[in-house]
Image (cartoon, rainbow, N blue to C red; front, top):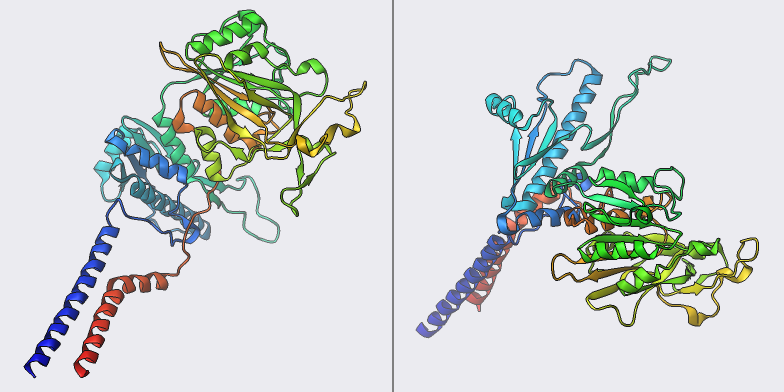
Length: 528
């Protein structure tokens, strides 16, 4: 009898001990989960307003590495304490309140992702008059509803109404419509807080104004016209991103200026002379950066220079034939049709996952769309000190090289848009990077893009690729990103009641269930 009681007591002790161990493990797991390095934030909010893009998360994570950068985000909101007198004033108040809430939520996310490297300060004119005025004076804030982005000792002021929000403001001169209907009221169309604040942070990370020299005098398209084949939109976009754009007649001047950050040749239709090629090579050997963008022109034939002298020094060869690709059939993946002009359109799905320029595009699912391309190949034996990578941009597998078969009138022959045979299919490189070693200083870098896509007609689709190339060549790696695209947040849709129930389940439900299980097992053993 005593032995039976001892066994029962021992069994109960084992059961209670096991329950305490499981409970302790659960508590430790919960404590570990709330540590900064282990936390993960799920966005349950409507419209996923706490979610930001991977590029922003990577930017904020980089600020904290080494503790070298301190980012401060200061808000100066207009007090909304007055009671609106009319329905229109109530509408405007509600709009402003909505913007303030969205901005606060976004900055909370920035602080969460940035950790100790990010500090958010909300200045309240009603609760701290003296402190708010002092901060406004220090940042030279003259109007309310602004966010001050300060990185180290540099700062930038963003307007909540104009920089962070896209508000449809009706014409103030518009009269009420007949019938007594009220005039249109301002409407919040989009909140662009992340784009504006992250862009401001990136602009503060870089200093100085790089200079891009566009080489002229080679029968290239215009840099200022508004036509489809001109490059005015590219020039404007570069200037908007803080680069200075100049022109350079290299054949006449004979050398690249010392202040040149990037040298660009955009669809030149004539070969460089020997002395101009030597000037470009001398610039690269002293650490210069070159973007050579060529394409294929059907007529006249001499509009397709191969830059053989320059290419040989870079370990590359630009082909004379045009690259075409089957027009993909959505109903039958891996197949397509030819014999139509659309074969000149190249969807560049093969992007280098390792290069900073294309890695961001891959992450965002952006696919460049180029046309009139020529194949660029690495030489079997590149010059000493030169390394070549032809994986930057590649076509899909069903591309071929078409020989020039234009008739006397310039029109292509009927079979010009058709491959000679299936054995001609292959993936073709239309983007390469050549690096020139420089023992005395920084290495020279040349990027060759052998297809059209950065002109006014192509900037809408390929603008990110073009700007990333220039920013990377200018060594402004912080500004290599994906611009203006709203990311789809990874979120869990749940109501407030579901969130509350989940919290009770984690806090009390799971430990209670463990305790109840132990009691049941103990009761059953006591009856055995």
